[in-house]
Amino acid sequence: MGEIDPAFIQEPEHRPKLRSIEVNEIPVIDLSVYNTGDTKQIASEIGNACKKWGFFQVINHGVPLELRCRVEKVAKAFFDLPIEEKRKVKRDELNFTGYHDEEHTKNVRDWKEVFDMLIQDPTLLPASPEPDDEEITTYTNKWPEYPPEFRETCQEYAREVEKLAFKLLELISLSLGSPANRLGDYFKHQTGMLRFNYYPPCPSPELALGVGRHRDGGALTVLAQDDVGGLQIKEQSSGEWIPVKPIPNAYIINIADSLQVWSNDLYVSAEHRVVVNSERERFSIPFFFFPSHYVTVKPLEELVNEQNPAKYEEYNWGKYYVNRTGSNYKKLEAENIQIHHFKRSD
Ligand code: OGA
Ligand code: NI
Image (cartoon, rainbow, N blue to C red):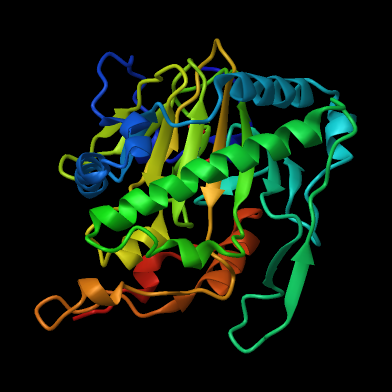
C-alpha cells in the first residue's frame, strides 16, 4: 500500500476498480455535416446520447488541433513551475480563479492541481448565495507571469471552444424539438470557466480519486483529455463505472445540471469521476459553459404540459453557482447544493 495523506482516501464503497479501457461505449458524433446545414441526423444522435448517457464525444468539431496542442503546452509549462511560482496566482477568499491544489469533492480531497480562468473577463456574479442579497461582484482573471504566452493562448483557445459550445447548444435545442436558437440567449453574459486539470501520478491509485464522483453544475461541459485516460461515467441502468476511451483530437461533451432541468429530466447530468494511476501524469481541459448570472433555470415551457408537469422548481443560476463555488473549496459537514433540492415531490 502506498502512503498518502488520509485526506485523499475515499470511503471503501467509492474506491475505484482499476480497469483497462478496451472498448468505447460512449457515442462518437461527427460534426462535419454541421456546416452543410443538414443537422437533423446529428441532432437526433445527440438527443439519444443525452438520454442514455448524458455524455458523447465529438470529432470534426472545428477547434484547430494546432491550437489545442499549444494550449496543452502552456498548461504543462505552468504546472511544471516551482510551487512558489504557482502560488503567486493562488485562488483566495476574494477571487476563486487561479491556481489551486486543495479541491475537495464530496468532502474528500482530489488528487490533482487546477488552474481556473473565466471565459468572460470580467464576469458578473452575485456577491453571496443569500436569496435577498442583490449585490453583484465583478471577477477578473489572475494570469501567471510564466510561461509568457499563457494568457494569449488561453484566451484564443477559449474563444474557439466557445464557438463549439454554441454550436452544441443549437444542436441540443434542435434535439429537444425547439428552434436552434432556443438556449443561446441564456448565455449572453455567460459565467463559464476554462479549467486546467493536472493529475500527478499517485502512489495509491486504488484509494484516491483525481476527482471524486460528481455532476457538473452548469449547462454543458466541453472536455479535452489527453491519451492517458481516467474519466469514468456512471451508467444509469447498471450503476457501473464506464471508462471513456481517449480519442485523439476529440472532445468529450457532457450534459450538466441546468440542461437536465431545462429538458425536464429528458436528458441526464450524469455522475462521473476521474481515476488516477501510479505511472503517468494526466492533463485535461474542461470548458464549463454556464448561463448568465440572472438566468432563471426551469423546465422549458414547450416540454411541459398537463401529462408531463415541470419536475423542478425554478432557481436563479447565479445564486446556485455561488452557493456551489463557496462550498467546493473547503470540507463541509453538509452536501453542497444540487438540482435534486429543487425537485418537485409529486
Ligand atoms: C471536472 C471533470 C474530468 C476529467 O473537472 O469536472 O469531471 O477527465 N473532469 O478531468
Ligand atoms: Ni466534471
